[in-house]
Image (cartoon, rainbow, N blue to C red):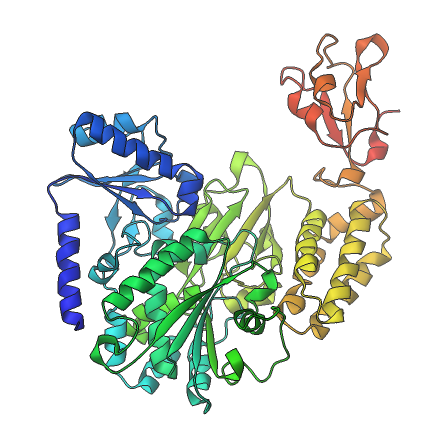
Length: 626
């Protein structure tokens, strides 16, 4: 089928979908929505419409990025403004149906805002100030189109890039990607066009294209959301890349823990094949390309491209020495192009709208937009897409809504477990590849975890080192043994056994691991330690010299104590809640905690009635009254 006919049918279907005579109800059923109860809301909507004998079309869509407001329900009525409702539960459904569908009451008390599309076609909610700071390219369709309907994607500009690319020489496509300034969105930031050019020039055949959808960073979920909400963008990007480098076979390596992403990707591949947008003789241009899904077991190290190749080949996913690079000798020893989900999804709009359009966004050395997963102690967690060069302050406070509970900002971990922890003084650092590297962090795949005054930075470094050490493949001793030694030292410091010389030893070990590791996991593993030492050295020194954890996190350096003048004699809440039976009445009936039995679980403080607030947590332990 020629593209013009595909486009005509898609627009016809989309027009019918958008401008029908019955109301439309969009429900966000990506993983975040489902976790919040979206599927129960869908069932409640169906039952209520049937009970009220009302007609409406219910469509499951992806995630718009407002994860903290899920489940989200958008109601579109003919000749009426579109309203998005937040935190919808089955109990709220009858009110929405009666007020919004049966009548023209917009239920403003339940509404998040009205839904609109900007000049770029991106969906936004004008009432939320955060959208003023966003620049949505990858997220433009998410939460608005049906991710299981290819016509919705095509009608909104999809596959225009592929059509244009197939009318160009492969070398011209690569040149356009080079001119755009697109750099790999998987973390390393290698120029995408140069990688494509290397693969194109490799003389061996056949060639392969691989999409890295492993996404193993704690707190990161950008790739998952894209595949669940707009999988066609990734498929189209891979197809353009295959044409450019001369490949006929592609693979999407995705972790099996993403079942919904796998399901929607499989449907997208099947529909693309049915319409001649994938498979043999694509769009009648004599170009063949097919894509298979390879499910991974979820090892963090599998995100490293040579380890990923080993996994697809059915071998243990451990990195190998480079060079040769995969573009020259990759899958089954053949030239292989590997890019991240976000990188491939960036390609169709670049080809469709031009390299100049893309390069006009961002900074001199980091072009385009960046997607981030905002997590941690924020008011509004979720996904955000901004122009490269946007500051951390804008991301955290203007878009993320600042710190929950009025707490004080302390640090932001950016770049995944092997990223860096940056303090308040670095909030005005622009988010781009080079600026973050100078600050001691990395862009990584785009995970951002925000911490407040209740976080201990030594404990934070230990947490990420523990993850990295467990995820190390163990192939090179520098990483395997070095990260274990780092972890041991951090454990000693948080347990009150640290020495001042340990701080210099930590720094020396970090440099050795960074310089002697085989892959990116080992070379970036020291970042959490190095950045916390650099920006929060005072906390390390307090742990070592004063045996004090100012955030009251490290269990060996804290103790719980019951204030005699506030303890209510007849209250037994803490006694009943203590799992270690460490609390008993003392002199005059005042409760006393046996420190030798206390496990520092904090149950006593949680259950102590707020009108008494008799249980306090102190550090160092030596500050306990004698």
